[in-house]
Structure formats: C-alpha cells, structure tokens
Image (cartoon, each protein chain N blue to C red):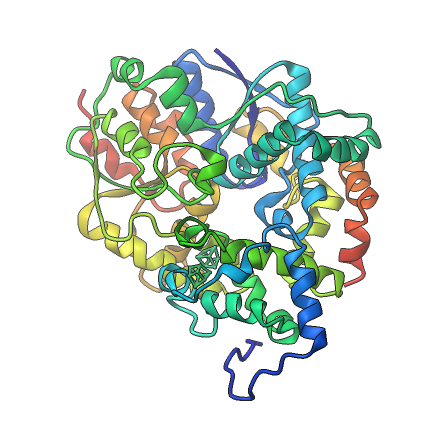
Length: 174
Length: 286
Ligand code: SF4
Ligand code: SF4
C-alpha cells in the first residue's frame, strides 16, 4: 500500500508532532532538517521519484519538519529510497533526504515497523551470515568452476553481534 | 602486490563468472588475492539505515579479519565497498564510536584497530597498478568494441566518504575500458542508479529503470559493462523478464580486461552471463 502524502486533509501540528521532530533531529543524519527551503532538487533528481509519483523526497523533508509521524511511517514511503545518494550530493543545504529517510527508518524500527523484505534480509544475515544461502549446492558449483569454497562466515559471531546491540530482538519483534 | 579478497554475498552465491574473471585477471597482473577465512556479509547498505552500531560492528568484524591478515581489502561490489569504507573511516576517525563498537566486538573476541584500507577493484587497478602498466599488459586490444559503462552509485557516493573520482563526472571506468582498446561511449543518464535496492519493494520500478538504460545503451554501444554485482543483476534480469529481450550483453569489467590481457574467453566465466556475450570475440585481434 502506498502512503497518501497529499495534504488534502490538512496538517495539524500538535505537541506530539513537535516531540517527534525533536526525536528525529536527535537521530544522526536528520540534524539539519530545519534548513530545508523546499527547493525541490531532491525530488527533481531522484530516480525513484521520476517513476513513482507517491514518492516525493521534498515532501518527506517538509513532513519531517512538521513532525508528521503517521504520514511518514505509513505504507512503503520510507522503503522506496534506493539509497543512491543523488539527493545527498546535490542538496544545496546539506539537508540530505537520504539521511532523513535513514533516520526515519531507525525510528520506525523502534515503533515495530520494518518492510518485510528488509526484515527477511536481516534475518538471513543473522541465520546464515550471508544474504543468500551459500551451502553445499553453491560450493559444489564453485568446485566445478575451480573456485575455492566460500568462506564459512562464523554465523555465531554475526548473530551474537546483532543480539548484543538489541537489533535482532527489535527486528524479530516487528 | 597482495590483498585480502572480500568477494561479497551476491558474487559468491550467484556470479561466479565475476569472481573467476577477477581472480584470473588479478593473477595475470601479478596481484595476489587472498581469501578471508570467517568473513561473511558486509552488513548491506540496508542495515546501515536501520541501526548504526550494528552496521558498524558487522562491517568491522570483516575488517578485523583483514587486519589479522595484515592486508588491505579489495572488493568487487559497490555496496560492500561503501559499507566497509564508511565503517572503516568512521571508526578510525572517532575514538568514542570505536570504543562503543569494540565493546560489541569484544563479545566475539575481536577488536578493530584501524590498520587497513578498503578499496574497490577499479580503484586498485587505477591507483595501485596504474593505467600505464595495464596498458602495457594488453595483448589483444578489443578494437572497435563500443561499451556503455555503468558506474553505479556507491563506488563514488557519498563522495565525502568514498573520496574517489568525481561523483558527477567520473572517468575511472571509462579510462579502464579505453585501455583495453575498446571505446567507452557517452550516453544520456549514464550516472543514473539501477535502483536494484528497491527490487524487493517495487520490482516493476527496478525493471523499468533497468530497461530504460539498457535500451539507451543499445542505441550507442555493443555491450554494457558494470563494476557491481547488484547493478549487473538488475541490467541482466530486467532484460530476461521481457517477452522479447533487447539482448544487450552485460559484462563484468574484469571479464573485459581479462580478454584484452590475452586470457581465453572460456577462462573468464562467460558461461555464467545469461545474455550471450560471445559477440565480443568478433572484435578481438589475433
Ligand atoms: S534539495 Fe535539500 S533544501 Fe532542497 S528541497 Fe530537498 S532537502 Fe530541501
Ligand atoms: S537517495 Fe533515495 S531519495 Fe535520494 S535521490 Fe536516491 S532514491 Fe531518491
């Protein structure tokens, strides 16, 4: 489902919105949101915005300033950024929507929200040490091609790291 | 010259053609690539956006392995390059952050020291070997072959972290293609992202973006060349899912270089490229 980012309903700014903005600005990457002057460079040059009309980086920056938590965390909006850093490089104010999105994803996760694809990937890393299974089948193929066996990724270490930081529990709780 | 070789999940699991070509080409140029025992996923660019400390620790665990080997890391994936470079630089620069991450790493008996560098193979070729030496090693120039280069994003960006080439007007891959005797052509939207990272959210968008570039390249060039397994898969798959594929061969840079260095086509893993690339052979001088 796509978030409706249109402002037909009107935007109210209450205490909780100011609070959400404060939280966001404390998250690394989103410190400079107040400097956004809505020039639109981010949307104009975004490869996703060019094809997905509901994905508007400039609007994400605006909604962040207005602390519109629901509108920002709902639907696929946050998960449609390809992380290409075009907006990062070109934002004249170094507000950098890519980093706002990254900060918002961190807040979303704390609210128990993650896109299923992202969740599956993170669980693969914890369970296999890789994002794909690299087991006997892959290694036999590698052997046929005269390639060495794939490194054994010490899955226990990887899982232990992801547990220790609390990240894996958060992901599993989503 | 010796490096720790961080192959990365996608190449290890799916693109052995890329890995073979990288190993053969490096060998030919006198570069030793040493496998990294115990290494795993870099963490991915996705994890970077989800949790800072976890992303740093997962990346650093791999860097620690190279530190123990006493070798700088060479990567073949733009994503791995960005993830490992970012972690390496952040942890070297910020002692407080390093302590935090080392506390996590202590749990698995590791410690980040900050003694090695991370570089993509294109960077290694350009900065450690040098265009001149590569040029001298070219045995069979690929005369007349027109190539559409695709840089991808994370090789160059974020530019204040990667500090490599020019993020808006890069030349490295073009230069490395030209040195093989082929011609790297200019085409509209050359620097556009493949959008592979949203394949799992909106596949239709990724295929549309991929196809647009492939169709553009087809107008100007014979093949497309990539430096990242994710970009490669996007441009290959977006064609394979079409009813009638544009059939533009997508080639990993080391495959192209390997041919020019005189390595046999059969030795460069081309049977792993799902769009037949043998048309390149027509451009080879004996
Ligand atoms: S490019 Fe920067 S300043 Fe301009 S609208 Fe986007 S975030 Fe705001
Ligand atoms: S980083 Fe994300 S929001 Fe920014 S231009 Fe790229 S896809 Fe668009």
